[in-house]
Length: 226
Image 1 (cartoon, rainbow, N blue to C red):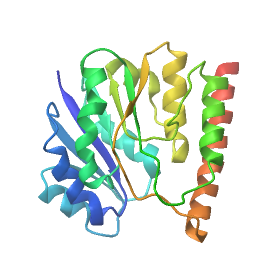
Image 2 (cartoon, rainbow, N blue to C red):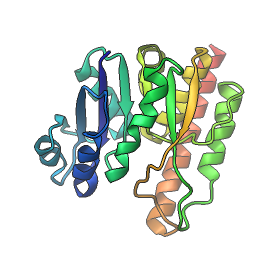
Image 3 (spheres, helix red, strand yellow):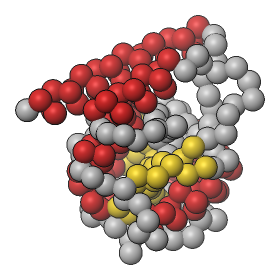
């Protein structure tokens, strides 16, 4: 069974080396691909130095576009592991995420993160995503609807592509999998990444995220109406 880790990365030089180093401790991963989404720092060079294959994008495509470009390079893996580049040492938790899919208990697994110690957002985007998943996908109580840390088997990858552009990609992954009757589990992990705070940049990020999720839900509603 061939398992490939796919990491979309835009200007992740600060934490990418630690992420890739931690992944080496995870059994069952046959290859790691980093999609350098038009970074302006040393993301691509750090990825190569740490043993990852690199797909370089000349123009920034956003997360969904980077994932699509990466999958096009991978071929046809049995299991695809999706991870963010800023997980650092906590990327070692990917083994727990892979287990349900490798054991054929689930078609898609989703990582839950511990509650952040400091102040983060107000939960508006997360609440919208949970509501949309229930309404458009089915009776699944998503506790981590925006988590980008996922493992998908071949069946899940086929029904979930093409990847949604922007920050709506995770919601679309979940809804499409539910509509196809696939098995989804959420896995408790100790993963952590650079969360946005309650400053101006954080509010701007969440505003963009909210807009993208609304757009994704509208497109999913149109898909269902066809």
